[in-house]
Length: 268
Image (cartoon, helix red, strand yellow):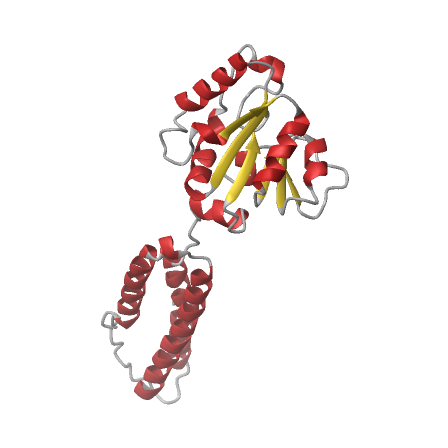
């Protein structure tokens, strides 16, 4: 009986080791260089799991053997019932091991920085219009009155400035509108984060002027809310993101659609 118990325990350890190997390999596929700090914690989890599995169980109470007459069947029946109930009350070893390991290997939620890199497919130059994407206003006429940065886009845009060479652009009707936009961006902290400078905020007087800016800069990604500009640039730009509540009827294969910039990067 002792040999059988030892063999069962060894088989349990082998199954646990194989399970841990699969978990670790799946986790490493989704980690980047910034996330390897978490591996140290996972290593500790493995050590604790191993110690848990090796901890001997508490001493079992020895059941006194009751000698019964050879002709009596009641003692045999009681012993059989006790053995069956003992087996039912103890959970299977495989299930217990898997539950313990699952507690340590919960999925790690990627950071916004990781999501930005993944979604942009390592693209490093991005052009983006202001109206309807970064600003609350949706027309040049509104910019003559005020310019308001959307609070929900701040985190994503600041992350883009860290990772990408970002250019912002918009059509305006006068110099006062330009000043309002620059002041709004400055108050939001974009120029103090180190990734965006005022020289990379471009203004023009026509929609075709904005399209011309994009073609000259040759970005990896262009982000716009005007479907005509998106369609016009589809064959010149590698990837485009159309920000609109309405999807394009027949978008090109390199055109993605989202209701907002933050929704595309999964931060809302």
